[in-house]
Structures are given as structure tokens and as C-alpha cells.
Image 1 (cartoon, rainbow, N blue to C red):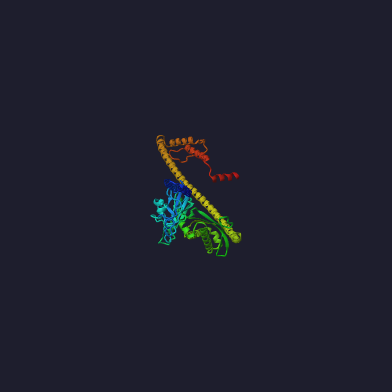
Image 2: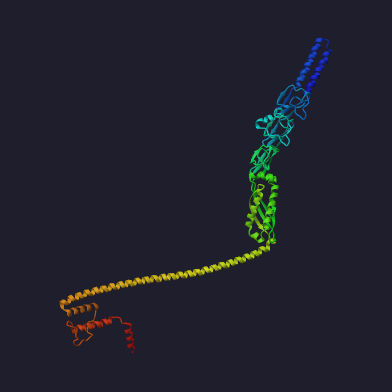
Amino acid sequence: MTMILLALGFISAAAIVVGAIRLQNALFRTAALLFALMVFFVFFAFSSIRYVGENEVGVVIRNFGSDLPQGSIIATKGEKGPQASILGPGWHFWLWPVIFDIETSPILEIDNDEVGLITTADGQPLPTGVAFAEEWQEASFRQMLDAEYFLTKGSGFKGPQASVLKPGKYRFNPKLYRIEKVAVTNIEKATVGVVKSNVGDLATQGDRTLVNEGQRGIWTAPLMPDKLYLNTKAYEVTVISTKERILRYTKGHAAGEETEIIVRTSDGFTFPVDVRIKYAILPEDAPLVVSKVGDDQEGLRDVLNSAVRAIFRNNAESVKALDYVQQRSHQEQQSMTMLQEEMRKIGVTVSSVAIGDVGDEASLGNLLKTQTDREIAVQEQETYREQQKAAEQKKELTRTEQEAEEERRLATASYEVQIAEQEKERRIIEANAEAEAIKIKAGAQADAYKLVAAQIGQGNAALVELLRIIGESGINITPRVMVVGNTGMGAGGSTETTALIGTMLDSMLDKAPEAPAVRQVRNVEGGN
């Protein structure tokens, strides 16, 4: 457009000049030449006006001037070539065609899930051994995107920059800055990011396997789950899963599983063992894993497989096959301890080792059958021992019951003896009481008799007493005893009294129970 305006101005001015030359009047001719010059100037002035759109940036390229310094690409002092200063939106004047070319390009927009990596085409050379220019501070980042400031006061470096463009719109000199859009670094849940920094100072102490944040190398502190706007070339991030994982070694291994482990015991048996390993990478150990094996995928799996198979094979060499089968828990614990120690060296935490099937029919069939038969025999012996114990316990129970019965009988006899003793004492007490009563009664009767005898005489008193006894005893007083003559009784006696006493005695004998000897004599006499 500018060249067209310039051409139109030139043609118009030339036409006016040609016409002015043909004029005869010198005044008119002079006026025409001045008008031609003015037309040319107007067209020439309009040709210097340039317009840059709202969403565009304009780059000025100077076609005339001094040459750029050796190695420079962008002009900062009006030299030939692309100028550092850019044109913003709107009209710009005095950019004469032929002298200046204007190139426009759209402004750059970075989306929310993107980050812009910056590479500069001009600036100070990077120091030896440095791959990225140091990151600019947030406060001066806008000045970094000012090409003129970057190349002059800012003393920016040529090449890859550690600084990045975050989401937003940017207007910059595309001749100096090349922008590459990459995805933002997103560290998911149950993962951490291990940073390998390509910028910063080199560590000078330690083995430099892991370095502090800000130094060049693998950082000791991982990045926690987050969305980060990192320069993925300056800071290489390896995502490590912190989930607990299980690695299986099985005979019929499915996808993602390993084949079973073949072991050989000290007695020459070779058989397969199914194993399950549970492990995880703690967040603080993730940098060590990256520094040792690179990632948590094939590199880690190869190291883990090698360690697991070696440990199980070595442990099996020192035991017999039958002991290996019977001491599964011991083998699990021993293998886990050794595996934990080995994997700890690369930052992996082993939490469980479990042994599944041990051997099969082809490898341990005969051995297991022999063991089964032996176990059955042992169980039978145990059953016999238990039965014998039961019989002995039953015998002991019977003996205990007999002893308890004897003790009960002894206790009963002891009680009976005590009762008899108490009965004996009771009877003695009763007999003594009765004798005492009789004695008292007899004494009273004797005293009474003496009083009666003193009044009526002894004979009469005796007769009265006899009659009382006859009345109380119901004695038949019909004489059954004949008394003849004088019996020689004392002064108070009489024949009648003697006869009566005889009759009483005879009656009392009839009422008294016969002794066994008397009954026997009578039975004999009756039989005769």
C-alpha cells in the first residue's frame, strides 16, 4: 500500500511537472512545479503512515543504515535489520517505504493448560557449562519481554530461558523471542514429581546424587500434587506413583504378573514357589528412586525382580524341601527382612512378602505323600495317647468316687458314734435321775410309813401298805398259798400277813415275762 501511494505521488508530480514545462508564463510554470512538489510530498508523507491492528504487533526492519555488530541480529541503535522496538496497535508515522519494512504478526495467547517456553535469538552468550539462562524475577519479567531493554540494560542471554510464559496474552518482538507452547505440569493425586534441574549452581559437597532446591541436579524434595507452570526443559519432572503396589510371581501368570520363582533346596529338590510382594514408594524416597533407576516403571521392576528371585533362591539353598514347606512363615519373614534391606538402597519400601503355592505334584508329590502318611501316623498315635489319658482319667475318677464314698461312710459312722455316745449319756442321765427319784420317793415312803406305824403299829401299817399295793397292781387276793403254823415272824407279823404276801408274789410271777431259759424248760416239759 505504501509503495502504491508513493508511486501515485511520483506519477502525479511527474505529470504536473511535464505540464508546467509546457506553460509559457514563468510564474505559472513556477507555481505548477511547486504544486507538483507539494503533491509528491503529500503522497510521500502518506506513504510513511503504517497501521497495526489491536491484536497484532509490528516489527520494523530498517533497510538503510550502519551494519549490526558481529553476531548481533536485532538492532538497538538504528542499524540495518530488525529493530528491537516494536509497534503497538494504532497508526505510526514517518516509516518511509523503501527505508523501512513493517512486518505484523498476531499477539501470542497462552491457554490455562499451557505454558510458553522462551528461546531468544540474540543477547549475551551463555556462560560455559550453562544450558539455560537464569530465571527472571516476577517484578522484572515484563522488562524481559521488552527486546530493547533485554538487549541493553537487561544484558539478557541468548538461547533457552528458564523463565516461562504463564496463561495470558503477550505482545513481544517475534524476531527476538521464539515461543513454544507445552502442556502445564500437572501432578495427580497419589503421585509426586521428582525434579531434575538443568539450571542453578553445581553442588560442591557430598556425592551430588541429590541436591538442594535451586541447585543443578535431582532435588531432594519432591513436588507435591499440584498444577505447576514449569519450564519442562529446564526442569525435567518425573512423576512417581506413591500408591501401594503388588507384584505377583505365579505359575499361570496373567498380564502384569511375573513367572513363578524356581528354587532348589539343600536336599536336591527343585520346585516352583508362588510369591506376592507388596511395596510402595514414599514421597520422600521418590528422588532416590529416580536417581538410582530413572523411574518407577521398567527400571524399578527389573531391579525388584532380580532382588526377589535371588533372595528366594539363596534362602532355599540352606534348608530341606520338607522344612521349606513346613516353615513357610519363617521363609516369608526371612525373605521380607532381606528384601527390605536390599530395596531400601534404592528408596523402595517393602511392606509384605507372602508365599502362596509351594511346589506341585511333579516336584514334591512323593515327598508330600510320605509326609502325609507320617502325619496320619502321628495323629493316630496322638489319638491313642488321648484315649489312654481318658482311660487313666476315668480310672482316677472311679478311685476318687470310691474314696469319696468311703469318706462319706466314715463320716456317717463317726456321726453315729457321736450319736451313740450322746444317747448313752442321755440314758445314764435318765437312769441317774430315775434312781434319784426312786431314792427320794423311797425315802419319802419310808418316812411316811414310820409315821403311820407310829400311830397304828407296824403290823397294821404293813397291812395298809399291802392293801394299797394290791389295789394299784390289781392282784387277786384269793389265797393260793396256804400257811400253816407259826412262821416265826417278828412281833408285828401274823399268819394272815404271810399268806397275803405269798399270794402277791405268786401273782407278780404270773404277770412277769418269762426268761428264755424258763420258756425252754416248759417247752421241753410240755413235749414230754
